[in-house]
Image 1 (spheres, rainbow, N blue to C red):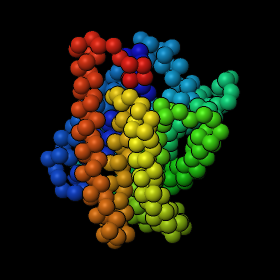
Image 2 (image 1 turned 30 degrees about the vertical axis):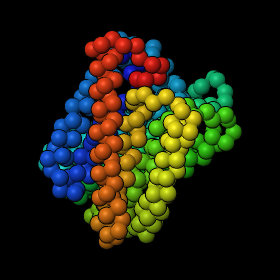
Image 3 (image 1 turned 60 degrees about the vertical axis):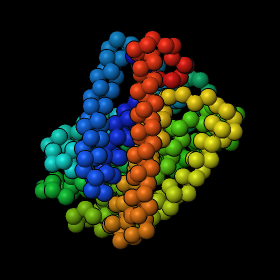
Length: 342
């Protein structure tokens, strides 16, 4: 409980987005199982996080002001929005709006408070040395707000203009945040020593942030006749294709990085919450490709997404199994947890 990682909501992000992908592909039994798992994981992690805030507030606040771990709190926003999309597909529109509202308000507050506390408010310098893949979760959170706002907008009645504006604002901010995070993380990798142990699975979020930008773009493009969308439709469509291409290019890079870490340098493998940060990008890439292929009538991209959805599901099953073994060994058998294996 004391060392509960801020990014543990990634388990909801991962299961929720793979559930969405399974639904899009017509595998309802798999999709429903993953949806209920996502709901349960969200409730459990939320309860554990709230308990940690009450009982272990110094550790909670220490993470909030730690540039290496603090951005993990943005997983709450992304998890709530991914869950909102899935329950909306299930017909629970009211719950979808509630989750979106909570995520949007919380995201607005965290977008100002967390970077200030974790980066600008730090007395230790250089903060750049703490940059890592988890910084891209800020992008994912922003684009998740854009995505759900665009989905809700279709049936919002008099609130369409406001939601279309929220979607465009969040989407635009997400683009700039991706550029900023990319530059800062790249500088950290170039200017400071980079050990194999430093290249955790959180760097896969760089690809996931690209993929959710694609999804947000396609959802915005099919919003009802919104003036802000008409003004930038060409740009949005272009960004969707460019970001999908870059996300595709990143996949072999990230696979090579994983090989370099575990096989070439023999970094010991162990279960860690960061593994869920690898599952989510794989699932998000699949959903983004399927959606882009259908909206823009690009069957090749849709087929790539369909194949990728099975890859994401397989990795999910593997990581879930590793988590079960980890929980069994640490909670029920009382084995000592390796440092950092939250």
